[in-house]
Amino acid sequence: MSDYASTEPGGEPLSAWDYRSLFLRDETAFDKFYCPYCDIRLSSVLIYETGELSKSPHFSARFGAHRYGCDGTPDSVPSHVNEPTKRHYVKSVMHAPEVLITRPAPRASNTARNSRSEPPTPDEVRRRRREAGVAGLARPRTYLLQPLVEVRNAVLAEGYELFGRDHLHEGKRNEWFKKNLKQMPLTLDDDTNYDDAFRTPRYINWNNDRIYHGKGVVIGLDGCYKITSEIAAKVPNLAKIQFFVKINTSALLNQNSPRSHHALCQRLNDLCQPDKTIKWYAYGRPAIGGRGCDVIVDSLDYIYIK
Ligand SMILES: [Zn+2]
Image (cartoon, rainbow, N blue to C red; front, side):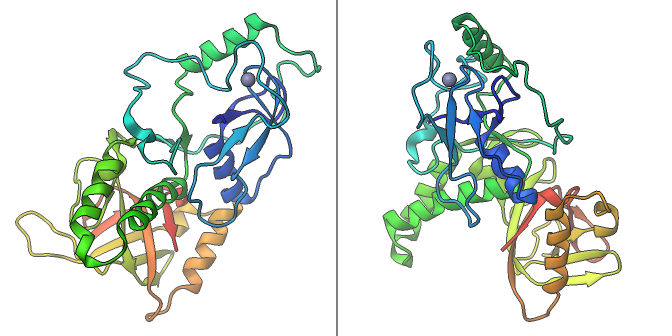
């Protein structure tokens, strides 16, 4: 199994999480995938699932083996970039996304360097894998919040399976969550991990962007939505104050926005009911506002609701 593929021989490599992000964004799906290094056909696994994933999407060499020593991965990069950590400890999250990036510009459709079907030479395969390693492609990336939430939820699900859901084992279970999530690197606006990255409003990081999560209701205002939090924000030297996720749709949404952004806004609109509690995830940096503490999302990619 491997993490990267292109949609035509010699084309631009994207990660399985990138293809999943495209699919979640506007249902973009591709029929054929190729190893970006040795050009063999690959098949996609779990990329086009509609529900929340509990295992990582990836590619498999189902049609035939990789060529010339290729195993579908970039050549190893310097150890500080791609440390062989114990992240594989969690069996269901083999290759979690490790970097949250900003949404790339739309791709030109035909980027093939080699449109004829000649296979690359062994030297060419080695060169491509080496270049990909230097470019840091060994670290799977995503520009949507949802895959990061999926990975964390997969780890939590595994912990609940191991320790059960009752209070008796809560301590051990939480210890296990922490230990495993800490071993999974994640680059946001700084280098952190899946444990530190996800926070409730009780533990705010005022210096770096983090992924906040909670439960609340959606309130529709003029040109924006606010989502409340059942948990109050804890602010140094202040009493607890209300926490809100603020989504300025009038600034973030326009005619050219992807279909998923329009669908998200429609959903927020439908959810504006005082008795409808939702689970939300929002990426950003909270600040004290007029009526409480707000995390204002910069992009509709950085909000995920369930
Ligand atoms: Zn290959």
